[in-house]
Image 1 (cartoon, rainbow, N blue to C red):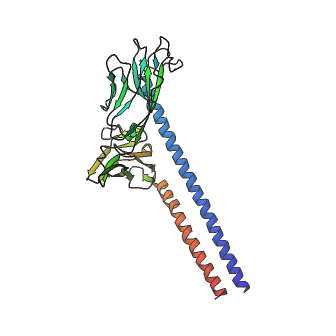
Image 2 (image 1 turned 180 degrees about the vertical axis):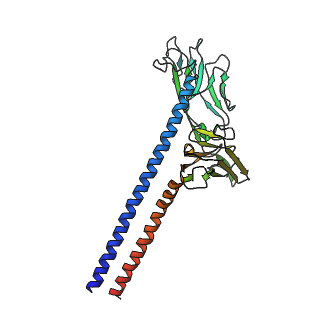
Image 3 (image 1 turned 180 degrees about the horizontal axis):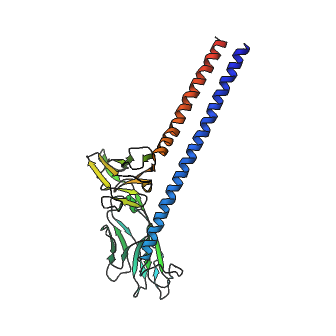
Length: 336
């Protein structure tokens, strides 16, 4: 009887030790993943900051660098330019439709009215002229009116964000307008009556949320968009804020697209992967929500270590299962 209790205690100790070891290993893995995500985020933020600096140095504000003076909204009932106080500052538009962002300015003399996208400080329009290659953007300004609408047609999910209507006074005045892009809606008929049935087109990348690629190999990502309502439009790929296409400065980028009435599949290939290719990769359809995956480019020995770490959890699971079965067997013999 004493021997059975000793064996029972040993098995119980092994089981507890196994679970503790497994928990510590999982904790180390989570810390390593968090550290990798932090480094990737820092790299993307650095790239975005460099982009902003380049845009500012090349004319990031109206007339060159942003005015260092205090930016105000302007004041009504004066001889200075000011915005209409009742201007709508939150606009919601269905994806694929036309967005009209309002900006009504009074007391303009020689000043210019500009629209700037806050996300990347990109100047979209100055006066009635458009300063972007994206022909979806233009200004609607009825002659002799105080209205300067920014028109985006058709609007996509990536257009969501804050846009600033600026007037080149001294100091400058600006009006932020927030654009929200909602899901696609489809007209459905039930027994002669019509209702709005919201349907979101599903986007997914056929891989785990984090993948590891060996240095020098090819990054291959597949994005699947299930179309339930209308065409998904064009599908673009991004690494962080940078768009990836055939003309990307990186080189070695290729894309494949397959379309059916119910599904669009876009494949991205990047040859000769390096550590600089690590980051968040986003598949962004024109008329559907984007999907993102984290890609980590590692050396051969690092790849083996990652694979071994991923297998540790399964090994501890099998060890714990064997110990538990042995414990149950001993209990069965004690109490048949």
